[in-house]
Each structure stands twice: as structure tokens, then as C-alpha cells.
Length: 102
Image 1 (cartoon, rainbow, N blue to C red):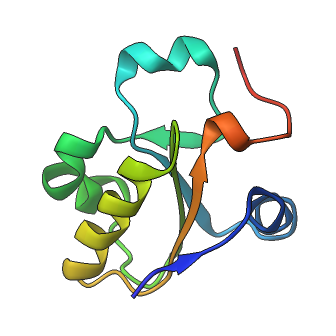
Image 2: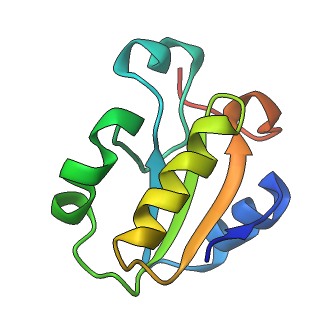
């Protein structure tokens, strides 16, 4: 089961913890809208086939986002079904009030 957190809570984790993975499940052509520093792009349609290569430790804390929050929820369900234990969905980058890389 994954946890839903706010962008503010996600930012606090990013600022205070080092052993985390930030996963962006948008498509590559959406990056022009900006992305969050240190995030790893794994488009939703490739989560099942690529996430284990990107994050091999199934106990690692994973923060997931997309554009609006719909795809991040789907991705979190996929990762949960694959045995990942520490998944946090913080929704869409459109609600991210902090700095983005453009």
C-alpha cells in the first residue's frame, strides 16, 4: 500500500533524507514543463519493465509524481504490486510550489 502525501511533505523528505528515489512518470516530451531536481524519468508505460533497473532496493523510499496526479497513482499501484514497500505519491508537478528545473 502506498501513501499519499502533499508536495510540502515530499519537499521536506527531499531536503532531509539522502537515500530516496524521486520518480517522474510523465512522458519525455513533458519535461519542457519542468522537472524536480534529482528525479528519474520512468514513463508510466515503462514502470513495470524499468523500475527494478532504476530502483533495485524494494525497501528504498520512493517519491512519485506526474503532471496532475493520475499517472502517479497508477504507477504507485504497479510498484506496490511488484513488492515495493516504501512508496509515496505526491501528485502532480502542476501543484509543486517549489523550484523546478526548466
